[in-house]
Image 1 (tube, helix red, strand yellow):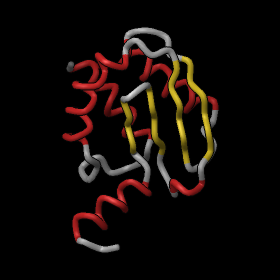
Image 2 (image 1 turned 180 degrees about the vertical axis):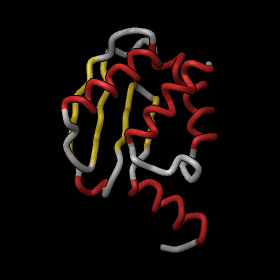
Image 3 (image 1 turned 90 degrees about the horizontal axis):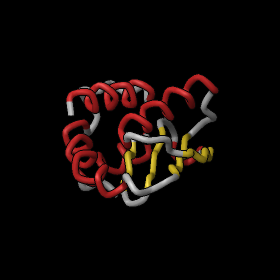
Length: 113
């Protein structure tokens, strides 16, 4: 799992978030529980607020290949409504590092609608 933690850190770094404020503990547990289930999947969907440059795509694909221990094909979609960051979905497994998700969590925590 230590190697996966390093790859998780790389993914968080790609999101340009201060990782001390990101949901890293929840994310790590989610990955641990969901990776086994998602290993049978063959494709990932990546939604981002802006277009990934080729180097970012390659780095993310390498991280996903390491996490799932095999090659995963990736489809990319730009969704400006995410405001920042990106979301990766592989089967039922989801990594949501979008600014929109973080704002929703803050609103929910403080009861703001």
